[in-house]
Length: 419
Image (cartoon, rainbow, N blue to C red; front, side, top):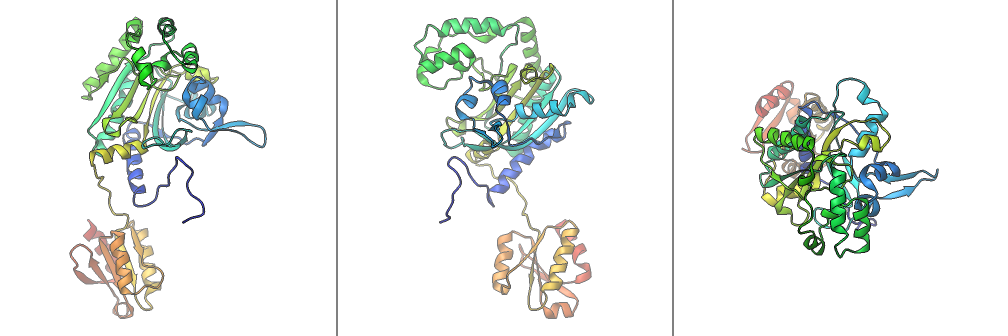
């Protein structure tokens, strides 16, 4: 047993499982790259205040789950618990909103950290792919992001997920609802911490998963009854655009999400095959976040999809991803042929053909076992006699057929057979 182990609530991605995670990331990113979103990468830690202001001090993420620490220089930093605040901070710092057309459309992929009770689908270190459209208030952007996420999931073969959609109103109509909800909550039998949360952000109480709390919430004021005309019209436009694209969704008047910065559109992707941790991703509009962290007014919308939970959803549906073998050709050198075979492998790689070879001086039997394990379509076997004749043996690992191929024709022959 190794002396050290991965910290509790974390995991290592190792072959062959890691290739599934790479495939999921690529599938989620592909529709974004095709829709004008550019890649952004931010540090793994940020100033604590960025998340306290943006995500919200009343949220569990900030108050309970954030990894915060003080550096030797006295800076108060935190491992990033989510991506939106960091991406918006980076966009503002680089003045991307001043450099051309709005919205600024960005996508990212990375690791995030929350101190939670580890369980299936909930980790202390997890991976997400996210997208943000910064600087424009347009229902088409909200709809676009929902449609792109749906497209990504379906490209992976997922079918049994649902899209939940709601509107949280804006700074004009939400205060009226907030007051009505607080008045309702003050009449309930809630614990001290939940009472405190109700005073800071009462909508967060609606997101409480405890059965005793949910039971008391029956009859609570519903936000849709308090939406102003502008928010109603905006929400109907989003719904109409998503529907016109042929993407099904469910209206969920209780959908809040766990972050304070959301306004108007909010949505969640859930998969019922994952048990209590059913959310595989979600997002929404956050028109006031830029101002919260010291920037100008930049209405924006975005989402983050969990790579870990998407992999679990694929497993729940029994979906096997069609992942090509990482190696197309595996070379075996016998006798004194290794320098020449090594050179051929290098040439194959330069020609864009995935190639590997047997290392460690193994005999033919052991080397061919390596070839089988590699998943390569073809094996190249060459010994002193083969090279003296100017050929290598090219073996089809599926049919078992083996033919002698002139060294100078190897790349063209392999390329033709792979095609």
